[in-house]
Image (cartoon, rainbow over all chains, first blue to last red):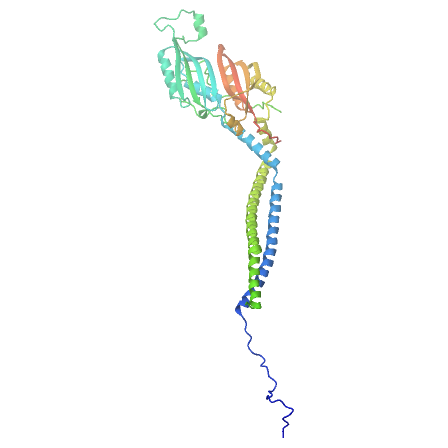
Length: 247
Length: 191
């Protein structure tokens, strides 16, 4: 018979067996919070190192720019500028070179045989034009008009002005002079004197280095040269090395 | 009552947000600004490099100019006119042309009426007046003009007076202008 005096009245149960491999609950919020924190820490590291890399790039760019600036030579630049400026100034004067011989040649070809030029003056107005003033004497008004027409039709001459017209012995009388005086003065008895003022654009009379005479000329109107407009077939230009302007 | 685990997670999120706001965002903004600066520097490097290349190219062209050409340019437009050499040259020209030499002289600087701006731009050389007086025939005078035109340096005839003296003999008075190089201020360079 069981001994009821030494045992509990509560029925004993066997040892509780725990079930292994059972489901553990993972909360999403937990994952998010942990992932966020770790991602942030990684981002901090990445930003830190990227910042250092960019700073190094900036430093390299600054160094490279300083190197390029240092390699620029101001002295060389001034040298080039000086040479260029000297060339420009010289070219400008060369382009404005005028052939005075071409002016004389044009006058020769535009002066009729019955006209005599006593004095001739030429004045240059910078690089725009030449003002030519010729004291002319001729035998009649017809010659004067004819000469003016020749000047006006001349391609080289820009404008012609006849002024200070003086006449002598146009009333039909002859000048009371001796044969010696007539011979000394030439066969032309001065009856009409005037000043012819001509304006010649400099662009019409450029100096052409290859030749000593101008390329343009008016149509010849006379074959008889006057004392001051002696026309030669060629101008004998001696090729002499002058202007040894050694500085 | 908030569970302890939930509080920790919230705290982690808060710390992450604080790190983003206080460090990552400002740092990224700084990196962006630095990158813009780098682009600017690169653009300037390109410009300076182009200038250096062009300068070297021009310098090469300058070095390729022959010494004869340099001398010719210096003779045509010297740094300063020779106040004795020019009258001597005019004497030589007149003599070579067969004329009777009477007088020649260096008169002085000439004011041709150019504006100060034109001088400041470096377009105009300095002008100097010289004079020459000779006598001779018409052919000789034309020969004189031809030789003046062929001079190694500019001799521009600004005033010419031609008058007959006796028969075919003429007198000529010439006022001419020659030039020297107009150097810009604060420029000292040897060609």
